[in-house]
Image (tube, rainbow, N blue to C red; front, side, top):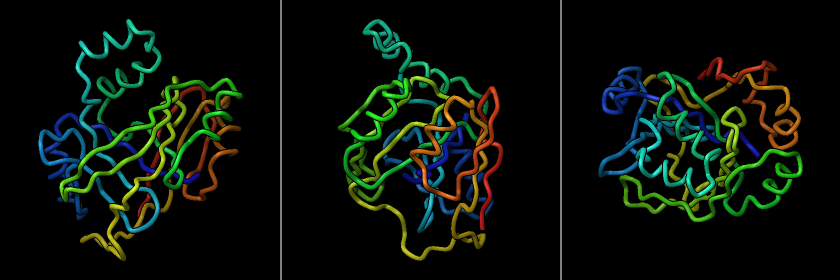
Length: 205
């Protein structure tokens, strides 16, 4: 698996899009109507997701918790309440299932919720289908299959001259280090052990 994308949590999506455009990045909203996220794609390597909360109402989260999905909803609560800035990571594989990876994680005691039929229609009318395994602990990056359609531009250079994310330094609890080293083969991701978790830096070139 590879580092798929880095989530940057924002409080005002429109303002964040303008801010990142002002930094010389090309940004596109995740969907045309009522978007909650926007994407900064690169031709290769991980992309950036600007995300204004989880998009799930308090009522919906309450129902999910009553249905036994309290741990699952903790991730959504985190996205809705965390400070603005780099908040978490997704690790990614090619299109297809995540069954093998999910089996490995559960064997390691890293449980979560496997969602197999996710999709969104982007601003170009493409229906992007994918799967996710949301680990119960937000400190552990979630897993995602790559989209059935590749939305990344070819041979693209952003107006600021950047072509890709070259390094992401992630501080994570030692209990997840082994699993991440087992799953991820990507020199872009640098792991540091700590009792908490945090995206320490993201470099571009």
